[in-house]
Length: 269
Ligand SMILES: Nc1ncnc2c1ncn2[C@@H]1O[C@H](COP(=O)(O)OP(=O)(O)OP(=O)(O)O)[C@@H](O)[C@H]1O
Ligand SMILES: [Mg+2]
Image (cartoon, rainbow, N blue to C red; front, side, top):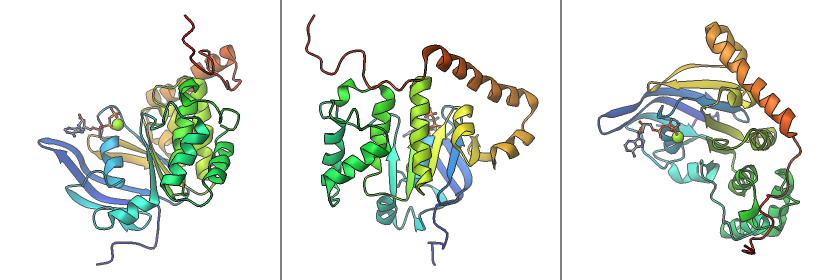
């Protein structure tokens, strides 16, 4: 049986997963076209991380099929792992090292040719060049997240999973991370991101899939969903960005390159 299809990107059919008696995924069907961004929208506990973990081969589904970049997550897990990047809610960066050192370290560990060159290219791509020589301990939340995403892109995997990439970030940092995600997709990476934020899906996604009670209850472009949703939901979508616009107008949207705590903690107290 040929499990790999000609189409790469992500393809999921009838995926189920339970934790003991708790049925979390009850038959998921999902397609992500190569080079596009799909936002998987769902409330707390909907099963977003569970689905991402299955696609990233960290968990095994109970039944159904999942293919990533043309490879089956169950039978071709090594090829899937070589095709993906995964960033979770907590940035996997080393605080003591600088941004550049974090990147070169991971590039060396992955045996990439020219680790220093790769680090500089990623620092430029994700607008971290100015802060490259500073310890990560001095970075803002948005800068850490961007560095984390940059690190995950070493080796240019064709598929990126971003699990709640902006949870816990202030609006300004969120827009910086959004720019970084747009940059990823613009360069041809297939992106599946999970989010609880309607405005994030609205800002970034080519298609939005809503996960509810174990199933993708609806999937489509924002325009398609807008036509489906009752007016009360549409009103909610439109209110959030307005508040953020007010916030950004009040605080200004200059991109801070340093943290108020200063570049080094000298313990002068
Ligand atoms: N290892 C586990 N063992 C038992 N139950 C689990 C396990 N992992 C997750 N769950 C439960 O499965 C459900 C789905 O969890 P999951 O983390 O996939 O949701 P989520 O959509 O990512 O939520 P959040 O938005 O809070 O991150 C939740 O009810 C969670 O408590
Ligand atoms: Mg989660």
